[in-house]
Amino acid sequence: MNYSETLQYLFNQLPVFHFVGGDAYKPGLHNTMQFMDALNHPYKKYKTIHVAGTNGKGSVSHFLSAILQSAGYKVGLYTSPHLVDFGERIKVDGQVIEKQFVVDFVEANITNFELIKPSFFEATMAMAFEYFNHCQVDVAVIEVGLGGRLDSTNVITPELSIITNISFDHTEYLGNTIAKIAAEKAGIIKKEVPVVIGETNSESEPVFREIAKQQNSRIYFADKEYQVCFSNLQLDKAVVRVNNNIDYFVGLTGTYQLKNIATVLKSMDILVSKFQNIKPENIADGLENIVNLSGLMGRWQCFGTKPYLFMDTAHNYAGVYELVQHLRKQQFNKLHLVFGMVKDKDISNILEILPTNAHYYFSNAAILRALPAEELKNAAKKFDLKGDSYQTVGNALQYAQYKAAENDLIIVFGSNFVVGEAIAYINLKD
Image (cartoon, rainbow, N blue to C red):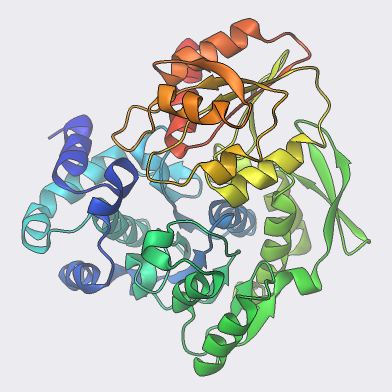
């Protein structure tokens, strides 16, 4: 098989959660442990950092990778989902996995796929762990896929566990209260391994403290120690002020990144004792140059000016709420929103917080889980959101760019796959 054929095998033979939803969800570590036994537990051959949370875990993971890279460490990074190409899920020093390794790994493990019957996520996670060992990384930053306690990444014993925040998402799997969701996320807390919580919440804090106590793990709440605000905020660049005395240029300008930066800074307080090459200038470098160092895409990422075009992977209530708050701090003439969702989420709470003074371009990604654009348009009408529906994301973005004036602002958001297809459309045009 070549690379394209190998990816088709993975997508067609293994259930993919982000394409089909719950049918692909396989909670528990049984499959993962079988696969790790077959590979001789590659994750034990390098240090790891484990990152969970409802929102922000991808940005935090990439910030950590960038800082560690700046300090001279060879860093593996496992995140999901990908936006344009499968290789984005598995990186070393910001570079996507070698295509030939993907081909070789799948061919070498066909028997394991058939015997173990892993999900797509379990298989790609095993590939990532093996690739990091192949590349002889010093440390790997591992983002949880869904939840924590039963997530297949939870086989690792990291140097540090991080839980960014808790809000309502995937409630059918994780529970319908903040406390229940927190208990699932807290499943990544390991015995005597410190844990950083990014955001304090009255419902989740007692859960985190109790589980940390049971595991004899020191627990830290980042927002109780770090106050982060913008000292300069523009559409495409920003400076943040920390505890009223330190300024950092940051490569991600979304308002919601303030919470993520506090989480990263508290995490670095702990990690500097384990990775002693890290200096203050590496933290500054990683915060400013996160995109170039880690290859992050889709977090308030600028893809054009006159008019400005940004893409953001906000796709649940908490993420969209933060995006809306960020928009209120920006200056522009008219707002154009290219918007698509998946059909297995409650969208009414999202629709009710979206701005009514924007023009919407309703679309859907080319996946089974996508909510048809016309259905989204009809649902949005009930909340006085006006716009047209389009058959493809590329078509929706094309019309938005045609209609927008130089001083307008275009945002693509609502689903990782909507953003991914929009990026692919822009890349094809270029």
